[in-house]
Image (cartoon, rainbow, N blue to C red):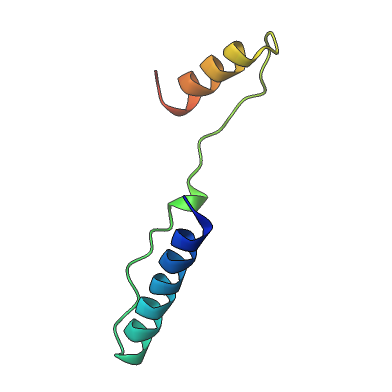
Length: 63
């Protein structure tokens, strides 16, 4: 994206946020899923990109 378009998007988000606060709208529900992370074991294999990617996919996404 062009910098001018990104600037407009950020500006619009800030304006909408300020309008929400001015009108007293409640905060949207925030999910606290950040604390629930899977246990990741140390990688014991070849340190090539494909092997590491496949290992992470199998652990994180049950592929």
